[in-house]
Length: 160
Length: 288
Image (tube, rainbow over all chains, first blue to last red; front, top):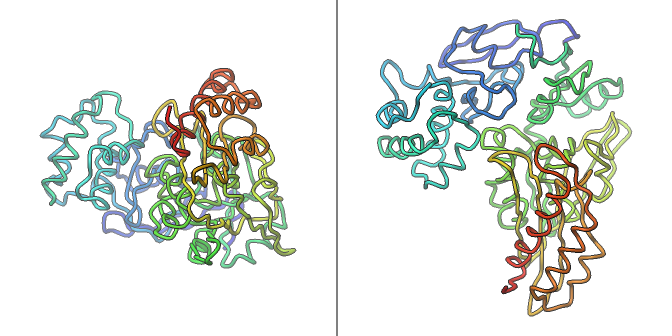
């Protein structure tokens, strides 16, 4: 398939259980596709350089940074964003973050929670070291991480 | 649409086979995208402005293999860091690669980024080049004109510069299985998730003396570096702490690291020296 410079490419993705099909520029980043084309603004853009993890989502079962991914790369994929994990009530990870005061301004929280979601799916009972390794691609400038680590441990307990 | 941090306009080609890809590359002015974890930041900074991207994602099934060939392990260039770091064959047969893959970037980056992407990008601070040098790995490059094999020592040319021509892609990296070798990848970073300020990959066969030693560095020059001649000074010896200090001093003197946000040149040389002593003490079992 060839898309000439300036032309648009058709992208079809399933986000939180719903299929969306849009024509976008090949250079459109997935995070902008999610926020602007689909209108789900829970996913944040922090650094825009693949460092801070605020834009973390789940694509085909794996956590990825949606600011460092083109929308076309997600064509055909199943995506879960922060809006898609809790149904009508809070997900246990969200409850654990709330109960452990694991946020202040909250900007990094959607990314932290999505990365925790992936971490606990691959490792339901992580050690503190494994939590730190799992979350080191997510930066929080308020909390100092102590309560985030506590929240992840708490969430692991609630989900077992 | 935001105007900051956006790539220039490009077209897109999605090949259905590797041969389509190679034909398309012959037209020029195209860049391959695999996981995009090195390429997209460069596109966003507009360091590169290709006319077309060629998306290899549909070929993933053919090119992300990890194949046990007895005396060697072949890895398809689209194998992700996450796959490499958790694969049992890699863990048991080429463990230095396994531990290094688990230290690339962060978990999200490892879920998308590929061996071939990182190696082709040849960032002078990337983790894999040192490991490829230590193993003396063989790279298979393919173009519409055919295939050729290149040793890691010839592949890396300089910062972001390799033996790959514009119409070639990296198809495979093959690692020899080295039985009974101790190993370590030491990565010193300024902050979690950063590229290495100094990275050291070591493979050593040790009995009552050192029988073979391979030590390779990243982050301390224009490309990954292996001090072949100096390595020999430790082989055949029962190495002491004093030997290690002398060795590390000599290696450090040959390094020409850049001064950048990760550290000054002279600081990196000091760090390289200390890290060499620490890493080799551990791998060679030298009591200080």
